[in-house]
Image (cartoon, rainbow, N blue to C red; front, side, top):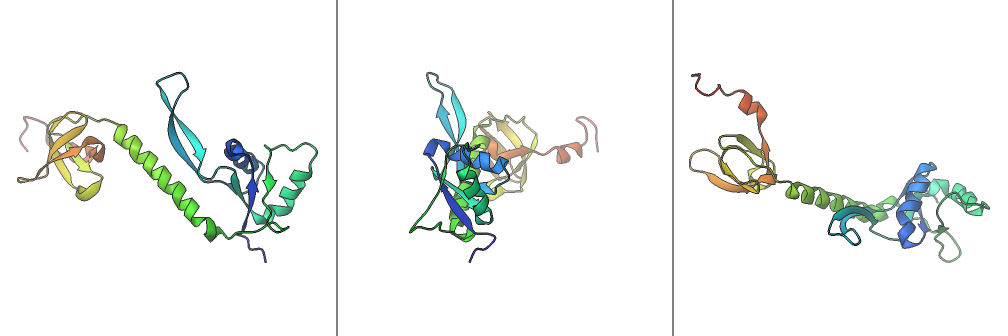
Amino acid sequence: MRRAQDCCILRTSGPRTLKVAASLRDAGFDAWTPEQTVSRRKPRSTKRVETPVPITPSFVFVRADRLADLALVLRLPINPHPPFSLFRHGGRVPLIADREIANLRSMEADAADRAQRAARKAHRQAFTPGQEVTCNEAAFIGLTGVVEQSDGKQAVVLFGGALRMTIASWRLTHNPVQEGNKPAMGIAA
């Protein structure tokens, strides 16, 4: 019995995986393959580029409610999509429930989180002494402190009293709301 959330599996060559998924999505199919972004060195260069790659090369998942349409596409004399085939086992097209690929979806989300975190870590941000900042990571999340010194990579932040911490600058954000409420230098409140 076919359910609306069931998927069928398409097979293609590894390098075509993302192209097949994109082409089918453009044609109105609910097609998906888990992907992640990796940093690769450009050929004959020292520069690096971010490149999307499939987590499961050669496998694309498509909602099974369009199985008949996929069969029609495969029978066309000239297929408008990159080459693919329906995965068959025991003479039939097996259907898998969405919950069976939930781990792949979480792997894709984890890969995206790691990429975002790496991008934040790569961003250097210098703060000026006396500037108020808010910590947006780790144990001090939400705490506001005053920068004593910063070199772009890390900052020494005074959180009040004697609590002074050295924190990576990518974990801090400028706090313009609090700074806007302070009286101007040299003017008594």
